[in-house]
Image (cartoon, rainbow, N blue to C red; front, side, top):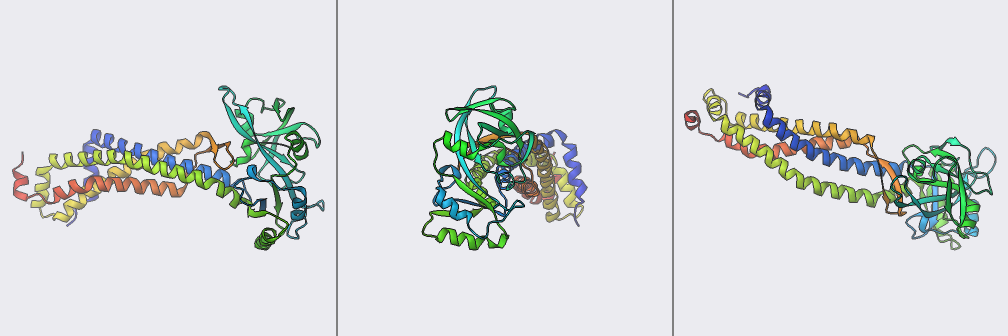
Length: 388
């Protein structure tokens, strides 16, 4: 004969204060656990969505990012001549030879300097990135000292707003447009005419060549040809894979840090749950003896207390997730370890994080309630009924 589940719920409600305090401790641990996973997922999503599966990034071999890469004009011309490169409506290849460099800009308010990506673009750069749209102003004119800034740059850095002036490369550059790239990393970049930026930074080579595949399955063929060509020292990656590789190191660090902190904090939460359940057993000794006398078996007593502890963990998990969900309203910035530039991104809550957090809270509840439940199940009927 089993004990109804509402018996466990009733006992949690009867001890409202201790239930609240214990659940609050568990909620704090789940909040830290979920927020860390959301942070890592937000970083991964921002970088992965920056790239397109049908675009190919070509950089110098052994370069982990465009900042470290260099492609001379002859090599860029060979890449442009590949038959797999898609042709645009105007009859020109959907290919952009780009320059990527880092500059140092002060932040608004704090005046604290941070690295920012400057990207020298070509005529096809915007066509290759449909997720980027001009929100305000216009595109830079070819041959001019004009730039457009990502929405995050315009909001957070001095000189990055519409009509403002930036000083770098021994020249003044006027911001003539603000672009919005959604949740992608392009929001943390400044774009200008590639040829003008190459002159300003005295860079005779491109950082990368980006092109659209004529047909997506042709990637392996063009990759093997480019990487096997003795005239070239280049490697080709799908654009989304390129940005995913950039996110892996930082995301892995955040997950390890989060799990470490969570394990430390969870020990306190588990001990709190254990104390709460031990107190519940001690206060209900006569009640447990009565249940045993009525014919309820040890397994039923054990299951009732385990269920009570699981309810406690679930309550904490739901509360922790509820609080963590509001973190999605916050945008933070950190250094992109691959480019050493600042990258802005938001916390991201996914279905996987929800079930992982709830499972973690249930495990905390199970561990915290296991020993007290065993103690309750092993009580002698006579001794329990004699307790006062």
